[in-house]
Length: 360
Image 1: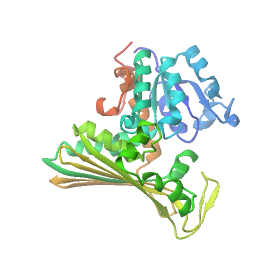
Image 2: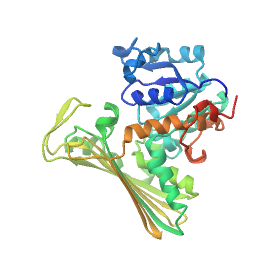
Image 3: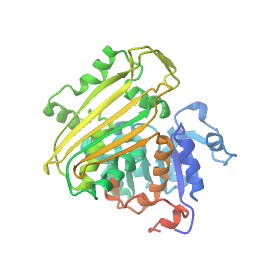
């Protein structure tokens, strides 16, 4: 592609500060920006990126469909919600407007195993529109590509075990609430933990009805199995609250979480496969104390055993860089709702993004 890639930013919160700046710095351009917060309407995106004005202002997301069809961007970056149901309207509009979409929505990373009905509907719409929808971010590499890379140098695998922690303060109020931050333990048990106290059949019924709320590692387990050619025979998850011994203030929730209340949660997903390999993956999302930091740790058990530990990864920036570096792969991909598990290995983009585009 000889011209710059034209990008629409949907969601102008904490993540967009980086995604938009990275877009410009990789030789593409933002042509539209949207949010549902009226206080942001009319604000130049330069102020969000903390750079000079770019002559693009934040618009009301109610005008999304009309503006996408008018301006015709190549791709939309969606940095809003964590569950596919919450993105349904936006992704339908993108597909119907013939605009590719890439999103930080964690469920979209491998949505076919948690919300297959909506996944297939969006897949059909994207195919009809000749565009691609995908989900990626930090998990694309740190819970996905790095693990499959380690697996490729292992003779025999019996178990893949992972744990990753992150500060919910970095991602906005929707994610913090989804992790139960700020709830009493009784509220957490009622609103979060109890949702997993069910039979496999009951969970499948929720999945079929589009009412299942997966933890992030549910979709990661699906992605890893797909990438490694494994076939999942059973999968379950368990969510438990994380607490702190002292009161702790959350700027995102704008409240003090009382000592002993939930600062967030740990969610452990265990998947068994036909091939005899177990995937056990835990994500810990909570309001951090001053001494806590992000940790990403994965072990492949077998011959040989290998453990990888990454302390203090810049999870937000890595998520946003992944999104932007994936843009050429999304535009080049087949039409439909496509997992990055079937896209090429992610590359560092040294050239402007448009120079990696195969389609015209």
